[in-house]
Length: 473
Image 1: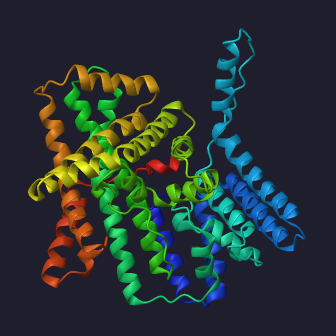
Image 2 (image 1 turned 180 degrees about the vertical axis):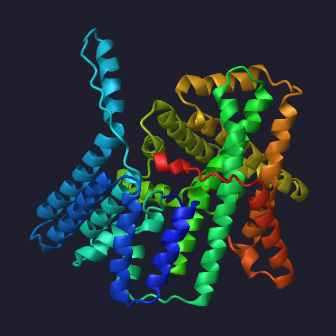
């Protein structure tokens, strides 16, 4: 059941009408049933995994509260972490590690029969396992109290707007909203509708149309460097609009029901450097890795080497989180090196900028931001490529054959047709500090903007409901 489908529209309309007619406790029961129906619509068999992960962390949380010593608390935490990682590892990474083990042993002339299992990846498993693990870690750190009501905790894990593709919510943010009274107002409904409308524009008009531009280019191995460059830019915007579109729709659905779901993207393409970009991109995952992996690994160390190694390792894991393939790992590794490199040259760049006359500093800032963007592009090429070799092939075409061919013209025109409206809207949103600034603007501005966006969706939007990219992660 996709957000951009007629089936979901019927599902959510019925659920919302029932929701606003119920009291708080029954609202939670309704949302839990609705969330299980929503998740079961993908494959009802995987509901058991969701319930197992829920029960595991629920009882581990209670166990940590009742434990008489830190050793017992740590034991319950390890049970939670190992249980969730085993579930995630088996369903997402078993074949990947099995294949690489065979190849590794072959280097030492040890031949074993490869074991390949026909495993279906449960949708959303990378998101809800990380969400439940963060709950257990926060309970262990005594940052939150464990939830005693199992049904409320089950709703925290399975809340359908952000269940299958995030954001990865924290218990300290979402659980109080589940446990407390929520108000459903006309203003929240209107704001929620604005988030949903913008998310649908990002998905249906921008992302799905750019996908039709990107896919043929990345499947070919004989196009010009210009084609791959434009397709690389297009893919970055496609991925962004696909995922940010989902996050905005999720935020809008939650807001209509009185929830405040965290912001997952904060205008990343307006970042001035690589570090800032990753603070603005997929915030729920990057902050998760920072809080639960990077910071504990670095500890109180002042060593730049340790911080650098930990940053590269953490970003490599972010790459692996996206999928069981080395090109994802290389994407993360490269991104980590980019962050380390930025910190290494930052003092030199600051001295260089301060030595420039005032009129040249703005130009210098734009130029460095553009160079950072090109660095990011190389990483996302590996993200989109089907293999490490495929990524290097595209990079070689960029460097060896950067000629402009007549067949590149439609590619360039189509790219700007779908990218330009997005970039103009994003500039407005960025300067105002709000994704839904268009819905808060004056009437004579708001109505034409709505009409133009609606016109673009209606005439040029992809009508077939296409799955969101991050469902495969």
